[in-house]
Length: 225
Image (cartoon, rainbow, N blue to C red; front, side, top):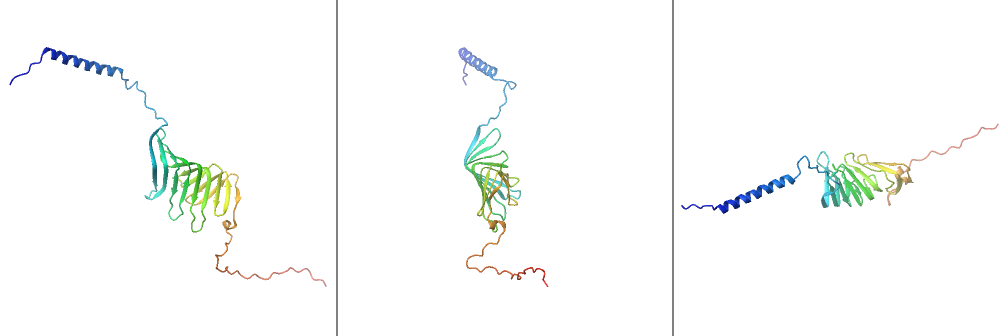
């Protein structure tokens, strides 16, 4: 078997190429900053991802959906892990209770998804139940506290409950007890039906009989002889 001899010119070329490679590597290492000189990366308030037509479900401890958040568009920020939402809708599901929905033109969701802030034409609607009419609250800001099951606002609010309307400087709505607390300067009009007055019987049904009243007695003055 014949052996191939390497010419001196080839050896020189290989040595030159090896020297160039080693010199290039050395120059790169010299120009790169060391770990001590490299400044740590600081997260900024810039988007790191986007999503359209998103749906986020928040589960109760028993695994049942407690809240559902929908949005036409969302932007997530890398520094504080918050989420900005366009046209958000928050729905609260409570067993054996009418559904509660909160909507607005824009909103934010905090990092651990425990607080939802709704801004611009915010509306909270509680569907009518067997004993309660529909409730609708209007304000420029509502805050949904998911863990506490509370909707609140520090802005002026207009509250409709059936045919009654009330105004306040703020509101706290407890979704568990279904109690509404208006804050500040509260005024408005409450219809008698909302105060527990008897409602008229349905059409075609006779009114409930009432107990007969005792004859009225006129007090008599002293007799004269």
